[in-house]
Image (cartoon, rainbow, N blue to C red; front, top):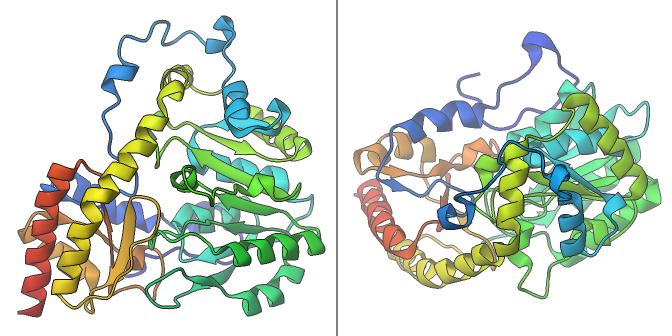
Length: 376
Protein backbone atom coordinates (compact mmCIF):
# COMPACT_ATOMS: atom_id res chain seq x y z
CA UNK A 1 0.00 0.00 0.00
CA UNK A 2 2.93 2.34 0.57
CA UNK A 3 3.35 2.66 -3.20
CA UNK A 4 -0.36 3.26 -3.85
CA UNK A 5 -1.14 6.93 -3.26
CA UNK A 6 -4.10 7.53 -5.56
CA UNK A 7 -7.79 7.07 -4.55
CA UNK A 8 -8.98 3.50 -4.16
CA UNK A 9 -12.36 2.55 -5.58
CA UNK A 10 -14.25 -0.70 -5.35
CA UNK A 11 -16.72 -2.57 -3.12
CA UNK A 12 -18.01 -1.45 0.30
CA UNK A 13 -15.49 -1.52 3.15
CA UNK A 14 -15.60 -1.75 6.92
CA UNK A 15 -13.08 -2.09 9.74
CA UNK A 16 -9.52 -2.72 8.64
CA UNK A 17 -10.63 -2.79 4.99
CA UNK A 18 -11.09 1.01 5.03
CA UNK A 19 -8.34 2.40 2.76
CA UNK A 20 -6.23 5.27 4.04
CA UNK A 21 -6.35 8.76 2.65
CA UNK A 22 -2.83 8.14 1.42
CA UNK A 23 -2.47 11.71 0.15
CA UNK A 24 -2.65 13.03 3.71
CA UNK A 25 -0.35 10.27 4.97
CA UNK A 26 2.26 11.67 2.58
CA UNK A 27 1.41 15.36 2.81
CA UNK A 28 1.06 16.08 6.51
CA UNK A 29 4.62 15.02 7.48
CA UNK A 30 6.00 17.21 4.69
CA UNK A 31 3.98 20.18 5.84
CA UNK A 32 5.57 19.75 9.24
CA UNK A 33 9.01 20.07 7.63
CA UNK A 34 8.11 23.74 6.99
CA UNK A 35 9.89 23.91 3.67
CA UNK A 36 10.39 27.62 2.90
CA UNK A 37 9.06 27.44 -0.68
CA UNK A 38 5.62 25.87 -0.33
CA UNK A 39 3.60 25.70 -3.55
CA UNK A 40 1.44 22.84 -2.33
CA UNK A 41 -1.74 24.59 -1.15
CA UNK A 42 -4.74 24.20 -3.45
CA UNK A 43 -6.61 26.81 -1.43
CA UNK A 44 -6.02 30.54 -1.26
CA UNK A 45 -3.64 31.73 1.47
CA UNK A 46 -5.08 34.95 2.91
CA UNK A 47 -4.90 36.82 6.21
CA UNK A 48 -8.36 37.09 7.79
CA UNK A 49 -7.14 38.25 11.21
CA UNK A 50 -8.61 41.74 10.94
CA UNK A 51 -12.10 40.54 10.04
CA UNK A 52 -12.12 37.66 12.52
CA UNK A 53 -10.57 39.25 15.59
CA UNK A 54 -12.53 40.32 18.65
CA UNK A 55 -15.66 38.32 17.84
CA UNK A 56 -18.06 38.37 20.76
CA UNK A 57 -19.97 35.34 22.04
CA UNK A 58 -17.69 32.91 20.22
CA UNK A 59 -19.12 29.90 22.04
CA UNK A 60 -22.76 31.06 22.13
CA UNK A 61 -24.72 29.70 19.19
CA UNK A 62 -25.59 32.42 16.62
CA UNK A 63 -29.21 31.25 16.53
CA UNK A 64 -29.65 32.98 19.89
CA UNK A 65 -28.84 36.20 18.05
CA UNK A 66 -31.13 35.37 15.15
CA UNK A 67 -28.26 34.42 12.80
CA UNK A 68 -28.99 31.45 10.56
CA UNK A 69 -26.12 30.66 8.17
CA UNK A 70 -28.56 28.91 5.87
CA UNK A 71 -30.24 32.26 5.29
CA UNK A 72 -26.95 33.96 4.43
CA UNK A 73 -26.11 31.17 1.98
CA UNK A 74 -29.61 31.24 0.47
CA UNK A 75 -29.49 34.99 -0.06
CA UNK A 76 -26.08 34.87 -1.72
CA UNK A 77 -27.05 32.00 -4.01
CA UNK A 78 -30.59 33.12 -4.76
CA UNK A 79 -32.33 29.99 -3.48
CA UNK A 80 -34.93 29.19 -0.86
CA UNK A 81 -33.56 28.54 2.62
CA UNK A 82 -35.27 25.14 2.59
CA UNK A 83 -32.79 24.04 -0.09
CA UNK A 84 -29.70 24.79 2.03
CA UNK A 85 -27.88 22.68 4.63
CA UNK A 86 -24.82 24.04 6.44
CA UNK A 87 -22.12 21.44 7.07
CA UNK A 88 -18.71 20.92 8.65
CA UNK A 89 -16.76 21.60 5.48
CA UNK A 90 -16.95 20.01 2.06
CA UNK A 91 -15.90 16.51 3.12
CA UNK A 92 -18.76 16.38 5.62
CA UNK A 93 -21.04 17.64 2.85
CA UNK A 94 -19.92 14.79 0.58
CA UNK A 95 -20.96 12.23 3.17
CA UNK A 96 -24.30 13.94 3.82
CA UNK A 97 -25.04 14.38 0.11
CA UNK A 98 -24.41 10.71 -0.61
CA UNK A 99 -26.67 9.71 2.28
CA UNK A 100 -29.38 12.18 1.29
CA UNK A 101 -29.46 12.09 -2.51
CA UNK A 102 -29.11 8.40 -3.30
CA UNK A 103 -32.36 6.41 -3.13
CA UNK A 104 -33.02 3.63 -0.64
CA UNK A 105 -31.24 0.41 -1.57
CA UNK A 106 -28.50 2.11 -3.56
CA UNK A 107 -25.53 -0.11 -4.29
CA UNK A 108 -23.24 1.70 -6.73
CA UNK A 109 -21.97 5.27 -7.20
CA UNK A 110 -20.01 6.49 -10.23
CA UNK A 111 -17.02 8.58 -9.17
CA UNK A 112 -14.57 10.60 -11.21
CA UNK A 113 -10.84 10.11 -11.58
CA UNK A 114 -8.48 11.88 -11.13
CA UNK A 115 -9.88 12.94 -7.78
CA UNK A 116 -9.16 13.81 -4.18
CA UNK A 117 -9.48 10.56 -2.22
CA UNK A 118 -12.56 11.36 -0.03
CA UNK A 119 -14.54 12.06 -3.21
CA UNK A 120 -13.88 8.52 -4.37
CA UNK A 121 -13.63 6.61 -1.11
CA UNK A 122 -16.35 8.06 1.15
CA UNK A 123 -19.23 6.08 -0.33
CA UNK A 124 -17.44 2.78 0.29
CA UNK A 125 -17.60 3.26 4.06
CA UNK A 126 -21.34 3.86 3.65
CA UNK A 127 -21.81 0.44 2.07
CA UNK A 128 -21.79 1.59 -1.57
CA UNK A 129 -19.50 0.35 -4.32
CA UNK A 130 -17.67 3.06 -6.26
CA UNK A 131 -17.24 2.70 -10.01
CA UNK A 132 -14.63 4.84 -11.78
CA UNK A 133 -14.95 6.98 -14.84
CA UNK A 134 -12.19 9.23 -16.14
CA UNK A 135 -11.67 12.79 -17.18
CA UNK A 136 -9.55 12.33 -20.31
CA UNK A 137 -6.30 14.23 -20.86
CA UNK A 138 -6.80 16.10 -24.15
CA UNK A 139 -3.54 18.05 -24.13
CA UNK A 140 -2.66 21.17 -22.19
CA UNK A 141 -6.24 22.46 -21.96
CA UNK A 142 -9.43 21.19 -20.29
CA UNK A 143 -9.79 17.46 -19.75
CA UNK A 144 -12.91 15.91 -21.30
CA UNK A 145 -15.49 13.57 -19.83
CA UNK A 146 -15.22 9.98 -20.98
CA UNK A 147 -18.77 9.91 -22.33
CA UNK A 148 -18.39 6.39 -23.73
CA UNK A 149 -17.53 5.02 -20.30
CA UNK A 150 -20.28 7.03 -18.64
CA UNK A 151 -22.83 5.86 -21.18
CA UNK A 152 -22.00 2.29 -20.15
CA UNK A 153 -22.08 2.77 -16.40
CA UNK A 154 -24.83 5.37 -15.81
CA UNK A 155 -27.61 2.78 -16.36
CA UNK A 156 -25.93 0.54 -13.76
CA UNK A 157 -25.35 3.06 -10.93
CA UNK A 158 -27.53 4.91 -8.44
CA UNK A 159 -25.80 8.30 -8.71
CA UNK A 160 -22.80 10.20 -10.08
CA UNK A 161 -20.26 12.29 -8.13
CA UNK A 162 -18.10 14.79 -10.00
CA UNK A 163 -15.69 17.63 -9.18
CA UNK A 164 -16.21 20.14 -12.03
CA UNK A 165 -12.93 22.03 -11.50
CA UNK A 166 -10.54 19.12 -11.65
CA UNK A 167 -7.91 18.51 -9.03
CA UNK A 168 -5.00 18.58 -9.90
CA UNK A 169 -5.27 20.38 -13.27
CA UNK A 170 -7.46 23.32 -12.21
CA UNK A 171 -9.57 23.15 -15.38
CA UNK A 172 -13.37 23.32 -15.23
CA UNK A 173 -15.58 20.74 -16.87
CA UNK A 174 -16.51 21.98 -20.33
CA UNK A 175 -20.02 23.40 -20.56
CA UNK A 176 -21.09 20.86 -23.18
CA UNK A 177 -19.78 17.98 -21.04
CA UNK A 178 -21.58 19.23 -17.93
CA UNK A 179 -24.82 19.69 -19.88
CA UNK A 180 -24.48 16.18 -21.30
CA UNK A 181 -23.90 14.70 -17.84
CA UNK A 182 -26.82 16.58 -16.28
CA UNK A 183 -29.14 15.29 -18.99
CA UNK A 184 -27.78 11.72 -18.87
CA UNK A 185 -28.43 11.56 -15.13
CA UNK A 186 -31.88 13.13 -15.52
CA UNK A 187 -32.87 10.62 -18.19
CA UNK A 188 -31.77 7.73 -15.95
CA UNK A 189 -33.50 9.24 -12.90
CA UNK A 190 -30.36 9.37 -10.73
CA UNK A 191 -28.80 12.24 -8.76
CA UNK A 192 -25.73 14.17 -9.87
CA UNK A 193 -23.62 15.38 -6.93
CA UNK A 194 -21.04 18.09 -7.68
CA UNK A 195 -18.17 18.93 -5.35
CA UNK A 196 -17.81 22.63 -6.22
CA UNK A 197 -15.25 23.78 -3.65
CA UNK A 198 -13.21 25.46 -6.40
CA UNK A 199 -16.09 26.80 -8.48
CA UNK A 200 -16.47 30.14 -6.73
CA UNK A 201 -13.34 31.25 -8.56
CA UNK A 202 -15.74 31.53 -11.52
CA UNK A 203 -18.15 33.92 -9.78
CA UNK A 204 -16.72 36.99 -11.48
CA UNK A 205 -16.72 35.32 -14.91
CA UNK A 206 -19.64 34.58 -17.17
CA UNK A 207 -19.28 30.84 -16.60
CA UNK A 208 -20.51 30.42 -13.02
CA UNK A 209 -23.17 27.69 -13.19
CA UNK A 210 -23.52 25.73 -9.94
CA UNK A 211 -25.03 22.29 -10.40
CA UNK A 212 -28.02 23.17 -8.23
CA UNK A 213 -29.17 25.58 -10.97
CA UNK A 214 -29.22 22.83 -13.62
CA UNK A 215 -31.96 20.53 -12.35
CA UNK A 216 -33.78 19.19 -9.33
CA UNK A 217 -31.68 16.03 -9.40
CA UNK A 218 -28.44 18.04 -9.08
CA UNK A 219 -26.71 18.69 -5.76
CA UNK A 220 -24.05 21.36 -5.12
CA UNK A 221 -21.39 21.04 -2.43
CA UNK A 222 -19.31 24.08 -1.46
CA UNK A 223 -17.30 25.50 1.45
CA UNK A 224 -15.17 28.37 2.66
CA UNK A 225 -12.11 26.11 2.54
CA UNK A 226 -10.40 26.59 -0.83
CA UNK A 227 -11.42 29.78 -2.60
CA UNK A 228 -11.97 31.72 0.62
CA UNK A 229 -8.86 30.61 2.56
CA UNK A 230 -10.87 29.56 5.60
CA UNK A 231 -10.25 25.83 5.69
CA UNK A 232 -9.61 25.76 9.42
CA UNK A 233 -13.22 26.78 10.06
CA UNK A 234 -14.52 23.54 8.54
CA UNK A 235 -17.61 25.33 7.26
CA UNK A 236 -19.44 24.21 4.14
CA UNK A 237 -22.89 23.73 2.67
CA UNK A 238 -25.16 21.74 0.39
CA UNK A 239 -27.72 23.22 -1.99
CA UNK A 240 -30.21 20.75 -3.41
CA UNK A 241 -33.92 20.21 -3.90
CA UNK A 242 -36.01 20.68 -0.76
CA UNK A 243 -36.47 16.91 -0.49
CA UNK A 244 -32.75 16.13 -0.67
CA UNK A 245 -31.90 19.04 1.63
CA UNK A 246 -34.40 17.78 4.19
CA UNK A 247 -32.83 14.32 4.00
CA UNK A 248 -29.38 15.85 4.44
CA UNK A 249 -30.53 17.84 7.47
CA UNK A 250 -31.77 14.64 9.10
CA UNK A 251 -28.44 12.98 8.38
CA UNK A 252 -26.55 15.98 9.78
CA UNK A 253 -28.56 15.88 13.01
CA UNK A 254 -27.93 12.15 13.27
CA UNK A 255 -24.18 12.27 12.65
CA UNK A 256 -23.32 15.63 14.22
CA UNK A 257 -26.28 17.07 16.10
CA UNK A 258 -25.36 20.66 15.31
CA UNK A 259 -22.46 22.56 13.83
CA UNK A 260 -19.56 23.76 15.98
CA UNK A 261 -20.56 27.18 17.30
CA UNK A 262 -17.13 28.84 16.85
CA UNK A 263 -17.07 27.78 13.19
CA UNK A 264 -20.50 29.27 12.56
CA UNK A 265 -19.63 32.51 14.41
CA UNK A 266 -16.42 32.92 12.41
CA UNK A 267 -18.12 32.06 9.12
CA UNK A 268 -20.83 34.66 9.81
CA UNK A 269 -18.16 37.28 10.54
CA UNK A 270 -16.31 36.51 7.29
CA UNK A 271 -19.44 36.34 5.14
CA UNK A 272 -19.77 40.09 4.32
CA UNK A 273 -16.12 40.15 3.20
CA UNK A 274 -15.94 37.15 0.85
CA UNK A 275 -15.29 39.36 -2.15
CA UNK A 276 -11.90 40.08 -0.58
CA UNK A 277 -10.82 36.54 -1.40
CA UNK A 278 -12.08 36.66 -4.99
CA UNK A 279 -10.22 39.93 -5.56
CA UNK A 280 -7.04 38.41 -4.07
CA UNK A 281 -7.22 35.47 -6.46
CA UNK A 282 -7.44 37.72 -9.49
CA UNK A 283 -4.55 39.84 -8.27
CA UNK A 284 -2.37 36.81 -7.59
CA UNK A 285 -3.11 35.27 -10.95
CA UNK A 286 -2.06 38.50 -12.64
CA UNK A 287 1.36 38.41 -11.00
CA UNK A 288 2.03 34.69 -10.68
CA UNK A 289 0.97 33.06 -13.93
CA UNK A 290 3.41 34.98 -16.17
CA UNK A 291 6.27 33.99 -13.84
CA UNK A 292 5.24 30.33 -13.88
CA UNK A 293 4.77 30.33 -17.65
CA UNK A 294 8.25 31.78 -18.13
CA UNK A 295 9.90 29.11 -15.95
CA UNK A 296 8.04 26.23 -17.60
CA UNK A 297 8.81 27.54 -21.07
CA UNK A 298 12.50 27.81 -20.10
CA UNK A 299 12.48 24.08 -19.29
CA UNK A 300 10.48 23.03 -22.35
CA UNK A 301 7.35 22.08 -20.40
CA UNK A 302 4.09 22.59 -22.28
CA UNK A 303 1.45 24.14 -20.05
CA UNK A 304 -1.71 26.18 -20.34
CA UNK A 305 -2.96 28.08 -17.30
CA UNK A 306 -6.53 27.26 -16.28
CA UNK A 307 -8.67 30.39 -16.63
CA UNK A 308 -9.69 30.36 -12.97
CA UNK A 309 -8.48 29.38 -9.52
CA UNK A 310 -5.13 29.12 -7.77
CA UNK A 311 -3.47 25.91 -8.99
CA UNK A 312 -2.47 23.95 -12.05
CA UNK A 313 -0.48 20.85 -12.99
CA UNK A 314 2.06 19.86 -15.63
CA UNK A 315 4.15 16.88 -16.72
CA UNK A 316 7.81 17.17 -15.68
CA UNK A 317 8.78 13.91 -17.43
CA UNK A 318 10.20 12.12 -14.37
CA UNK A 319 8.80 10.68 -11.13
CA UNK A 320 7.41 13.78 -9.41
CA UNK A 321 7.30 12.28 -5.92
CA UNK A 322 10.98 11.35 -6.10
CA UNK A 323 11.79 14.89 -7.24
CA UNK A 324 9.76 16.53 -4.46
CA UNK A 325 11.26 14.27 -1.79
CA UNK A 326 14.77 14.55 -3.20
CA UNK A 327 15.86 17.67 -5.09
CA UNK A 328 12.73 19.49 -3.91
CA UNK A 329 13.59 18.96 -0.26
CA UNK A 330 17.17 20.09 -0.87
CA UNK A 331 15.88 23.33 -2.38
CA UNK A 332 13.16 23.80 0.23
CA UNK A 333 10.37 23.30 -2.34
CA UNK A 334 7.08 21.54 -1.63
CA UNK A 335 4.60 20.73 -4.38
CA UNK A 336 2.11 17.90 -4.89
CA UNK A 337 2.86 14.85 -7.06
CA UNK A 338 0.13 13.91 -9.49
CA UNK A 339 0.08 10.31 -8.28
CA UNK A 340 -1.99 11.52 -5.33
CA UNK A 341 -4.92 11.82 -7.75
CA UNK A 342 -4.41 9.08 -10.36
CA UNK A 343 -2.00 6.23 -10.97
CA UNK A 344 -1.17 7.57 -14.46
CA UNK A 345 -0.01 10.99 -13.19
CA UNK A 346 3.29 9.90 -11.61
CA UNK A 347 5.29 12.37 -13.69
CA UNK A 348 2.89 15.27 -13.05
CA UNK A 349 3.36 18.00 -10.47
CA UNK A 350 0.71 20.35 -9.05
CA UNK A 351 1.72 23.83 -7.95
CA UNK A 352 -0.34 26.70 -6.57
CA UNK A 353 -0.11 30.49 -6.86
CA UNK A 354 -2.21 30.87 -3.71
CA UNK A 355 0.35 32.94 -1.76
CA UNK A 356 1.03 36.71 -1.89
CA UNK A 357 3.00 37.77 -5.01
CA UNK A 358 6.27 38.54 -3.23
CA UNK A 359 6.37 35.08 -1.62
CA UNK A 360 5.41 33.33 -4.85
CA UNK A 361 8.19 35.15 -6.72
CA UNK A 362 10.77 33.54 -4.40
CA UNK A 363 9.07 30.14 -4.50
CA UNK A 364 9.08 30.07 -8.30
CA UNK A 365 12.86 30.57 -8.23
CA UNK A 366 13.10 27.39 -6.17
CA UNK A 367 10.97 25.56 -8.73
CA UNK A 368 13.30 26.83 -11.45
CA UNK A 369 16.32 25.45 -9.57
CA UNK A 370 14.62 22.08 -9.09
CA UNK A 371 13.71 21.77 -12.77
CA UNK A 372 17.24 22.80 -13.75
CA UNK A 373 18.74 20.03 -11.59
CA UNK A 374 16.38 17.46 -13.11
CA UNK A 375 17.64 18.32 -16.57
CA UNK A 376 21.34 18.61 -15.70
